[in-house]
Image 1 (spheres, rainbow, N blue to C red):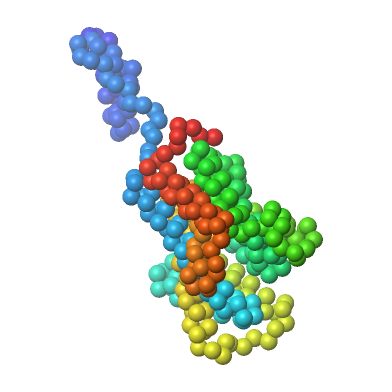
Image 2 (image 1 turned 90 degrees about the horizontal axis):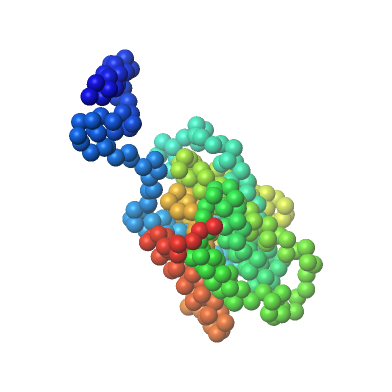
Length: 351
């Protein structure tokens, strides 16, 4: 009993001197045993926190919203493809810049005082490269080849996120990756697999869509890194600035004379396209605040399936069996990755 009193007195003296209660598990255990009580339980040093189901649903819903709005924007570009590229890029870029200037001013979001400025600059730069390489690929390569190569980005994203963000790769992720890539290939039917295109091009042309795929993967990883620390409106503003320079640069480099579309319908469609873009950027930025970079990249394979169905419904394209199978595979992979995230399914194995 005397030892227990001495230990308690020492603890009280320490508390009075520092003003802070210091817990001593060993002393508490000795006191409890000498007083005839049960020893105090030492709390575990590591606590595993799981995201609430509501948070997972929000994250996945934002990913799907990103995919739907991006597909809508792509369908509009497809519809007005008779216009020169500069006449599509430049007005959309101007609308975006004006929109985000207004919204950051109204919301009081700082565009000069924010953390991780270097990472934001790198994210915007890589995003611009990915965008330009994607546009170039769709112009100078067969559509199937460009689509299949650009949508290999989930593979790069999984690998880069595993190395730099320590994101775990589960059997569910691997299965969703396999089904998604297979579905994209079946829909796009690249000539280097199906030999469906008679057009030949130099082998190094394929490096451009692969560069788009790689840089897009880097964008997902960096966005995941900065998502919880930088306001998504701040990031979107600088993306709009980069988009404006891209549109002006394209117009200057092409040498085409710029005129607004004479028809009223294309003008309205370009405005709708401009509305879709901020939704894509903000939704993706917010989604990567809740979910992993690999998951967001895998869900973006949904773009291919949605575009396939839009081509059937709106543009009257015929549905081939392989394309339907590919669309089903992509949808299945997306549903599987969604369920695994919402209910935290890992199959008991992680890399």
